[in-house]
Image 1 (tube, rainbow, N blue to C red):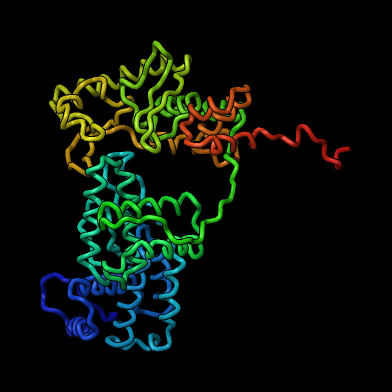
Image 2 (tube, rainbow, N blue to C red):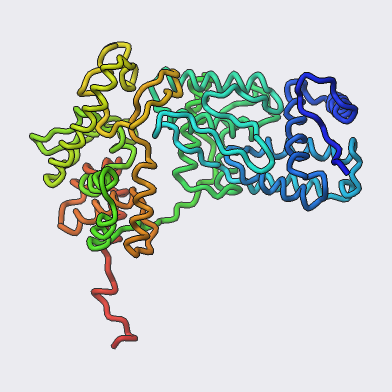
Length: 471
């Protein structure tokens, strides 16, 4: 027997079940702009076979809850849509006794921050893979804003105004994505409030919720606070001032993962070509991965044996060392990059991305060799903001997967990543008795307390104290 269905919106006259469904939504004062999403949720549910049984419905929502970029309100909206269709339109025998309230409450267990893949690493906009239940309406940086429950027009205006304020100040695409995500969650948290209620006192309940209900780390809570303060100041134009007390996220100290010198060399033995050069550069300079990938030709100073890091974490510049042993490999890399540069210029392609609107001040600078990437991508990509097709730098994947495979091939059980090499850099310097302030400057830490964590890694009680079991 064919399952009853609600056909998609394809321009055909609506079927009786779908017509009844839309009429019922209207009777329940569901806004017209939102009704289409109710229909879409039910279509996805039926396509996944959720209407066959209670177990199938539970499985559908379990998959939905694991979907990247799904927000609590979207999950609850989907439950509401399916419940109305199953109980009141299709009259499915199992639907009357089904625990719909318990299913809706599971939205509280969704991750507070479904991580987005960083589109700034490749210059391309990434969309989440479809889940088993179909495509989920999501809020992506360049997609149309999807209707939100309650105050839809205001929330859409908030998001677009926040995006404009961020771009006007020259923030990175990663910061833009992060801030928009927090503003959307903040509006979701206060979905039944109007603009007049978005007073500074509305901030602290959300921050306490993140700490108590979502159990986020302190940096995540601080990130949310920064995004919301930006939203208040530059979009709502409301001074925040001194916030009311709120529950602070608990700080749990975690020691950084560090490879021994021997383990590091074993990993290098299983790398080759560009991934090997990148790994050695991370280990030899202490740069963050995105800092290394963003290097320009002009950032290398072979005469002074230094690397200039521009717009690092916190928008700060700094200088780190250029290892002598990497001078020749980096010159070879520059020669390879030059071939791509000459190819782009021969085809008169747009220049590389210029930070902070420098392309307006110096319109031809992006086409000049000093501004070209040290690690240019092999293929062209579309700039997610300007939609210009140009050459971006290599993405994080070019080193992440080879590093993962090399760690396994080396027989190392530690979950080392490219960022681990930065920890190794700091630890090696402290082992060689360089002072803490020097290491802090090379790493670009804002506070020396962040650098001090590596001193704990140096503590080796197993070497200085003998276990009583071995006595």
